Length: 542
Image (tube, rainbow, N blue to C red; front, side):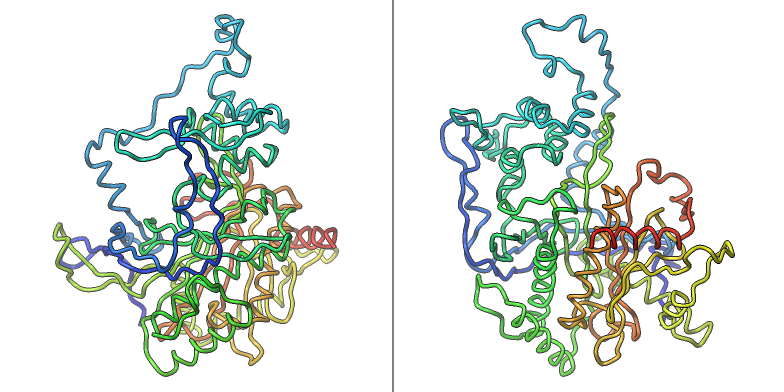
């Protein structure tokens, strides 16, 4: 039965959910890589040992997360982190943006100190523009020296960051200009030794624990970080390329890298499902091999046939690319170092109404974007007495151009093997959108989530994701948001739902405005032509 997702109720009181997470984390990382990060107050050494804890991690009281269904279901769901919101509530007048800085290059040069370097006298907007646009390593080194306090050796090479102890006893790196720091550190042309000490080395971005690892073999190396207090209730995980496998561009990303990134996603999901089912877990601080991973997946599937668990859902996403406007507006992700984020979403969340935050009045379905696909399937079945995905795949196979031309290609498919299909959706929601669909498995069954995906299907999905990014990057895309639309795991999963991935590039002249806010997406090409140019880019790579 389809239930309306809304916070509006007949008793005229808003209904919302509160996640109050408390959880443990199975530590699957084997080794440690304790390294120096820098000096505290110029004296004691700061290292990254906090990033490499031993044993199972316990998070007894993570941040509460409010989940508020939009009054109109097509507008989605809003999430509020209580800790962030409480800090704003202390003085709500802080909720504002700083006034626009008054900038005059003419005045700066006229009043400049002849002893100072030109770089140190430039207005902040010009520094930010230079940090994002310069391709000169010497420019970026100068900017790095301006934005933070680097510790260097006798040759001038960076060793780490200098830290200070705050009045609350916390250790913080000395960063003079945070926006400039992020922009410089995310510029691919910054020398790797600067990237290493500023953002890539474990611990450089904070104390997030490393709880998983795809072992380095000289070709690839991936760490799994826990983000314990997250905007996703119960925390989320980030698979980041490690400090000995720095990747800033899609052209540098290999199939082995992608397999490592995705292995950690599969592994964490299967481990968490095994915990829910009471299955035996692998030894602490020991990751799973691909064969062990598959055996665990099969055990989970067997156990789910014998016992009932709530229908949880996976959450997977990837913001590739970084940019800052000179005006200070961040245009995409917080870190360009290649990474993927993932979590799990419960079936329900405790419901509350009014200001009583202790006594629940029931339950609400917890929001997951794959649930909206299931709703479409249900409506379609009711209206046409037909399977939505059977007809969708048939539409792709039978596609014809809308302009009636016979001298141009008509296929929407960019790449396909027996188990997955990369294609251009007929109605793109960004001008260069691609989608990847899991097809049927070896037994002819639709694969709707990663638990239903065996080794061959997982390999096809991994390859399809990499090829999508390669095709878009070859066309010049520098910022791409990628998301997963999964079927729920367990009894509430919609039969026949296929796993979908969407790849959404952000183009320089299409930032999103009132049309997109109305869910009206404007394109300048036929989808068949975009499919053709993507196929050409993949052919060029071969």
